[in-house]
Image 1 (cartoon, rainbow, N blue to C red):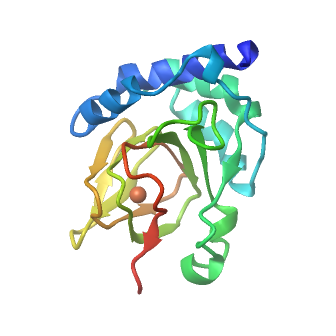
Image 2 (tube, rainbow, N blue to C red; image 1 turned 120 degrees about the vertical axis):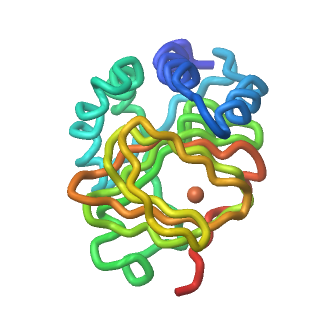
Length: 204
Ligand SMILES: [Fe+2]
């Protein structure tokens, strides 16, 4: 139990929950309601920064008008976050410099503020001019873009431009890819179930 961390953690999680709308939002909220978010379940993450964290302040600042509550909460928890990367990803498969421009963190999950029960929620950073190649996972996934624009595609579809504030739902197993443009991307993401299987890149 950690009283110091429970308040900041609930601040950001509640701010996100209140903002979720559209396809997949109901599923995320339903699964969120089943998570133990009590003070007794709260854990203080082991802070860990990665090179992509250099984009965090400008992304939070950019989201201030679109989602002021979330942006304020994100600024408040920056020092606690434990950033990580998919161990199967490398510059070799995703392009020179990719790993210095990509990181994700969990708010709910093994390295987050609450362990979660077959549910993950977190943040992703992706630097400008990057392609996060087609990948898939059994977990249904919701993205909420806090910055933009960026380009997204699902399965064999074309890339479409998405603006800050948009939410994107990926049903279980459907491949998807993300392309950033001139600015870095900060997004909230959630995996609603079947979270033990990691994301896998589609072979080029
Ligand atoms: Fe995904």
